Image 1 (cartoon, rainbow, N blue to C red):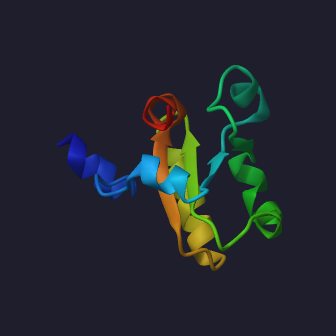
Image 2: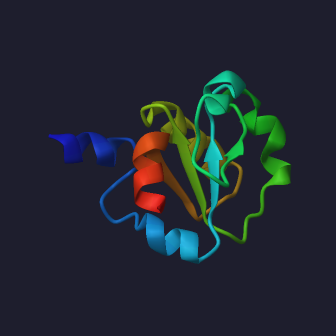
Length: 104
């Protein structure tokens, strides 16, 4: 059942976080600034979900992007926003705590 939800949110089992990071992936944490300041994946960039659309021009389309948040729901929305803005190599990394374990 958990795999169903992971696939539904776009964080399917075929997203190899370690490989994406080796390719120079950017991690975008879409939580609020306060949430981000209370803990985040080292090297990640904080762009709150409600400000993402206005800031897509600051992101590079030639590198993979991994989105994350508290649970994976906002990061799924962020992935959709980026895909709709012409980004093709975008992955939902789910919760930042899970992503941090996988990125270490």
